[in-house]
Image (tube, rainbow, N blue to C red; front, side, top):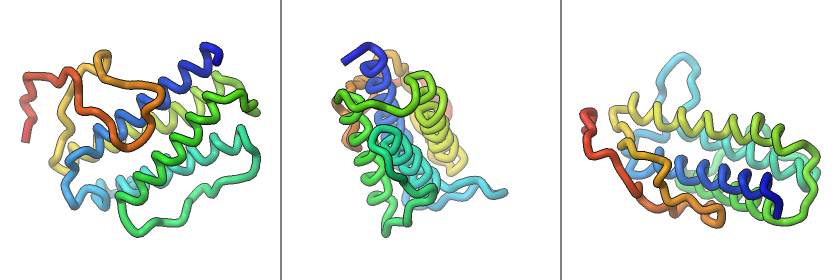
Length: 165
């Protein structure tokens, strides 16, 4: 596997890790939390992130993926579907499958877009009065082969957290 693919897989693993950090121990009201003025709810963000990963898969395999996937019955099911697609993309990156766009385009487009939405999930946690604990991500236990929802806890959480609920 070339260095570009290794870096993309690592970035994908960072997406998986940070997504779970933003969702871990979220209160029951969080998935449907509305910040108002047509801002996506957390469940809508996860569904959109799923669509982005589905789109990436089509760049390797062809076909199409819906811009708005059908809603699943629970937030947990939505999160699992997202991680299944993250894992599928990781498998494609680890293979010799050809991609119809460049590494740079993958990174600047759907990968960066997905990471932006991860940040929105974390921001919505704060707005929902359940902020996410800070940590030094340099030391996070992020591995390219761990793309599922079962992510480790922070390796170096910040000791000083004035906003702690």
